[in-house]
Image (cartoon, rainbow, N blue to C red; front, side, top):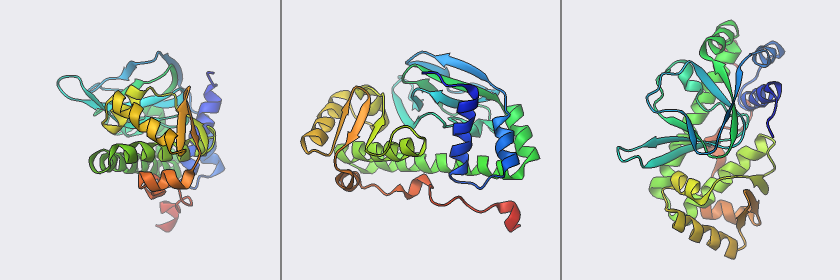
Length: 252
């Protein structure tokens, strides 16, 4: 169900607040942003590689993938975005898209102009820090995905991805770590883990057979969290979701 612009901005404030200390004025500044809601059909690219963009995309509902691709058009998904995530916040300072964004399901995004984001960051140093820290977290997740694809076997890759999405979904109020929505196809999961859809199918079956996790009708159910963490070689430190960091302006 499509949420309102106000709800989407509140989700974004909650995401920023999970890593940064914000004042009430700073929260109000984010909640006061005005953007344009855009519906995107499943499997449609809404930011193209190399495109010069003038807005950043806040995910309101649905599931979005960031991707790169080779000259043959084969894609590698490098992050999944859920409601409350600003999928391309770095474009505020680097507006030529170094990656693409695709709706993996029917999705809604709130397009917030770079000009408006720059204004609130210039006026509120705490928001500038929060935006910066959010970009650092995004880069940290990307680095872990490189390790996942390059140094883990198929079972560990998929288990690691499910652990990550469980924690992020719980933090975003989208279920909890034992049951959460992940409306991705097996092909989508393959693009995210460097596996074929057939291999993903076999790996999901193994997780189900071992009573670790099941994925059915876009819902992931975790039966044994500790075992999933062990199989996935998972440590949530890369998500940078400890206590919110102190304000750099106050330290200075």
